[in-house]
Image 1 (tube, rainbow, N blue to C red):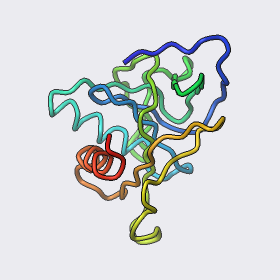
Image 2: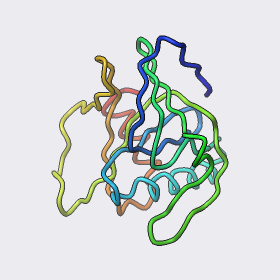
Image 3: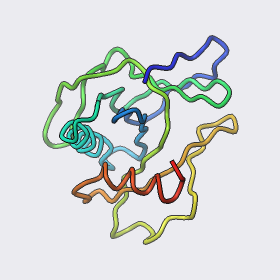
Image 4: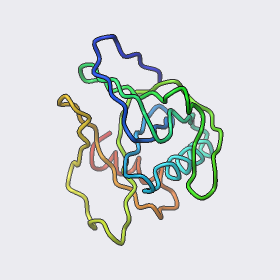
Length: 157
């Protein structure tokens, strides 16, 4: 799942959490306190339980490199392997240095957010590059299953 960004890449740092499950790189976005880390942990555990490869790329901050139609996420070395679950503490987790971004996931509050997202919703990474955006209720028991089912049904991934 490693993909190397070249020297001509557009680079920036963003507030997000990155994971890999199976061969899919998932960037989780949302404001502070929205449940990004808890969602990432639930997905990592579900992937491991299903016998899939799972690894943390980075929690809270990601370095992004965009070259052409490739988007690569990396976790800053200062916080490598650390996953902070709000209210529970900091966990160490297996990491991977970098991964491509295949999907973007946003935790949502079902009581406050729209009932239905727009069709074929996408997340703009900048430079004309976007990825499918999947909204996942924070209260979801099996978020990884929902993410992959919605990616297949809405985005033909």
